[in-house]
Structures are given as structure tokens and as C-alpha cells.
Image 1 (tube, rainbow, N blue to C red):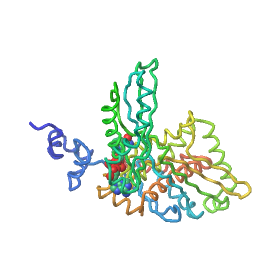
Image 2 (spheres, protein in one colour):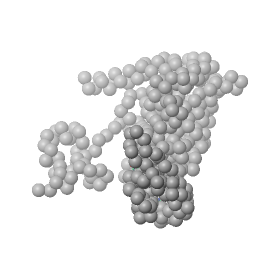
Image 3 (spheres, rainbow, N blue to C red):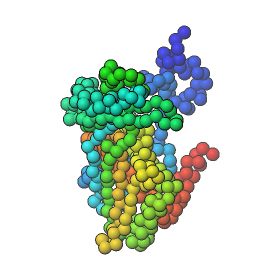
Image 4 (cartoon, protein in one colour):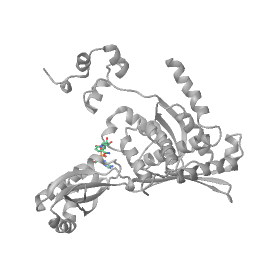
Amino acid sequence: MPKFYELSPEARRLELGDPDCLTRLAGQIGPETARHDTMSENVIGAWRLPLGIVPSLMVNGKPHKIAMATEEPSVVAAACRVSRLANACHGITAHVDTPVTAAQIMGVIPQDNARHAAQWIAQNAPTLLQTANQCDPRLCQAGGGAFDLGAHILDADADWPETFLVTKLLVHTSDAMGANAVNTMAEAIQAVLCQKLQGYTPGMAILTNDGIGRMVHAHLSIPCGIFEKYARHDGVDIATRIARASAFAHRSPERAVTHNKGIMNGVIAAALPLGQDTRALAAACYHEAHRSGTHKPLTAYRLDSLAQALECDIALPVTAGFVGGFKSDPAVSAAFQFDDISNYSELCALLAAVGLIQNLAALWALVTDGIQAGHMRLHARKTAITH
Ligand code: NAD
């Protein structure tokens, strides 16, 4: 008898029984199923989310359509509302940092050898970097590659009695998200350390999802008068209320958590159709929010009283990829085409811009009509179908 994972999706369904439940859960078996079967394990079909569209958002002078996959009512409507306002203010400007991802190569080392081993790693960094780069000639040809490496010691403590030697590898990932590329390099270095360091026991070799090397800074300046065109309220008053809401999130970690969740409503909905690792994006963003030791908002809003403008900023780690395995999915490459994203920088700039407009939309609603007015209207439409 073949094992469950060795079966075809059709055969798995037969074994599971209850075809009606399986069709509702995973759709019909179709031409896409064989491809999905190569993307994950024990596949029996596919699971779908509604896909909504933001018709236009201007980022760095270029209009993008945005395909957004989400089950949450009002996310797409809110993004559309603020995209119109942002476009009326010449759109969003964004700066994307050169992408750097780090790996940690961890091993256990006798306390007495630790300092000597760290010195050996520092002295042999050029050779170790060469070992890493030999793993990925295509990344190097694309202008990326491993470029820095150092080691530090984590001393034994009350929780665990061993000394850890941690080698940190920095990789310029060029147009890639880089997780597999960096992990492959890290494992190659781990193999060398095992051979060369006396008493070294390998622990693990893997990237860190800390996105400090993947930051995107995006900005939108809204003249207060523009608010009046899009709302019945006084523009300076709305801008003041939004800046106050921003100050509240900076003072209150409990508020900042929800503030940042609103950012991720947009980022994850836009990133999903683009085949991105949304767990990596979320991990990096929440870590960034907590970098100071307490939870802080990833956006900041300031009323410029002289210019009578609301200055809106987001600083977001965007661990995204323009090239990679996910691009072989036709739906993903269609999303890149639809959103009109032609390079890595445009991808990251757009995801940060979506985070900013989504957050601004939420704050705008919260400080005026409240979030429930629009939310519950759309939510009622959803529940009307099911009940
Ligand atoms: P990748 O990002 O690791 O690498 C892409 C490869 O494309 C490079 O190694 C390089 O050889 C090649 N390439 C060709 N042209 C390039 C260019 N112009 N710039 C850069 N590289 C170029 O690709 P991947 O295998 O798709 O890995 C990413 C995925 O790994 C994520 O989406 C996620 O699903 C998965 N992953 C994530 C984690 C995590 O902790 N976040 C861990 C493991 C795997």
C-alpha cells in the first residue's frame, strides 16, 4: 500500500472519503491541482480568498493597480479610499534599502576554546565568504552575494549550561527574498566550521527573519485642504486627530499592536497574490515594532502647522522577492503583471505604500465616524449570505 503522501490528490480524496465536504473545502480537482501538488505536501486541492482590486496607487511617480487577497470586509474599500487621496497629493515616495539578509550559524563550543574559535573565524572570513558564494553563482552574477562574516559568543547561563558560538553571515540578496539562498550558504559554512574548529558541535544554520537590512521608508504629504475634498470635515481638524492617534500609538503599546495589525491588513493582502512569504513579512514587521524593547507603531503622522499638511511616514522591513521559486506559479506571475511591478525596488516600495495607506485609512475612520460604520455595513453583507 502506498503511503498517503505518495498518492495523487484524487487518490488522497478517495481515501479521505466525504467527497461533498472535500469539494467544499478544497474545490474541484482541476488542471491546477497537479501543479499545487508540487508546491506543498499531501495536497488535495486549493483554498481560495476573495481577491479585490485597488484601481490605482501612485508610488514613486508610477501608477500601480493592486490585487489584494483578504477575507476581512472593508480592507480593500479603505485602501481604495485613501489611494484616491494619495494620488491627489502626487502619490507616495519610497526609498528601498539595499537588501541584506543575515544568517546565524550556531554551534556549541567548550568555554576554553570559544575565544580562539571566534578569532579563527574572523581571520578566515574571506575563505568562508568564498565558500558561501560558491553555493550561488547566479546570485553573485546578479550583483549579490555574501559580503561580511563575524562571530560572537553567547555564554552559558542559568537556562542552559553550554557556550554557543554564533557566526553571523551577511548576504546581499539582490532581487531575491533570499531565504533558501542564505540558508544554503549558512549550511555550507557550518560544514567547514565542523571540520576546522576543535570541539565544535553544530547547533543550527539558518537565516534570521530580522528585517533590519530590508527597510523601506515611504512618505506621503497631504495638504489639509485635500482632506476637505474627500470628507465633510475640516482638513486641519482631521489632520490633528490623525496625528493625535499616532501619538496615542507611540505612547501605548496596547494601541500600537492594533495600529500595526492595520498596516499588515494591507501588506499581507497585497503580498499574498504576489506569492510572498507573508509569515516572514509579519515576523520582521512585529520584530521591528518591538526593537526598542516595547511595542511601537511602524508609522508616524505629524501635523506641519506652517505648511498646513499632514506628514505621513512608514518604516517597514519588507522581506520580499522579485525572483524565486514562487514566480513559477502562473497566478503569481499574473499578479506581478497586473500590479505592474517591474523590479525588486518597485515591489518593496508598493508593499510599504499599501501598509501606509491602509493604516491611514484606519486612523481616518477611527478618529471620525469610527471603524464600525463601514466595517459592519460590509460585514452585514457577508453574514446576510450565510444566514
Ligand atoms: P531565494 O530568494 O532563496 O533565491 C532565489 C534564487 O534566484 C537565488 O538563490 C539565485 O540563485 C537566483 N537568482 C536569479 N536571478 C537573481 C537575481 N536577479 N537576484 C537574486 N537572485 C537571483 O528563492 P526561493 O527559493 O524562492 O526562497 C524564498 C522562499 O523560501 C520564501 O518565499 C519562503 O517560502 C521560503 N523560506 C522561508 C524561510 C524563512 O524563515 N522566512 C525559510 C526557508 C524557506
